[in-house]
Length: 192
Image 1 (cartoon, rainbow, N blue to C red):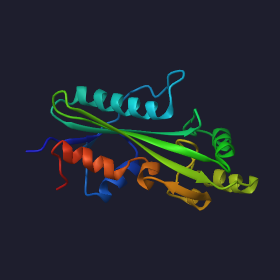
Image 2 (image 1 turned 45 degrees about the horizontal axis):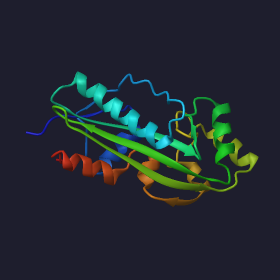
Image 3 (image 1 turned 135 degrees about the vertical axis):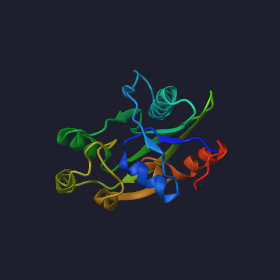
Image 4 (image 1 turned 120 degrees about the vertical axis):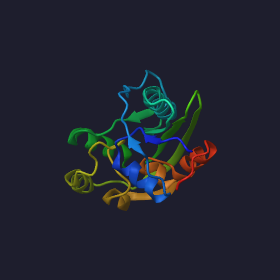
């Protein structure tokens, strides 16, 4: 009998992505992990650390379950962009991304029964066209940026501003499906 699968994320995008590969979590449980980055920490390291901490935190409260957690971080050079919670932050992020390439990192962690721990950090490079002030105004007015790392969601109107993607599209949305499926299969968990 396979262990129950807990998704340690309230993100509807992650649930929808899992559904694409036939995975339905038995439960959704969010962790109370502090998402602050450490001074000098790089974006890839933040994504991996937070995903691991979220999985471990939820697994500690749910022995016998398999816990899947993820965290997505957007980096421009050595700078980590915040999750946009207000229009000013969204505009600042979009100004920084305009006409540049950036990297999206998602850490995917799996904590299993016992001390089993698995982690993958996936990187996708994204090139954005030079955004005009009206491009930014329209996108901010859409509200799609709210709560999104880097101030945008690729799965909406912002995709019209993306010139090039190198890597996993689902990683930009918030859960790299190939790596997630491999982690689950490696732990002996298969979709029913």
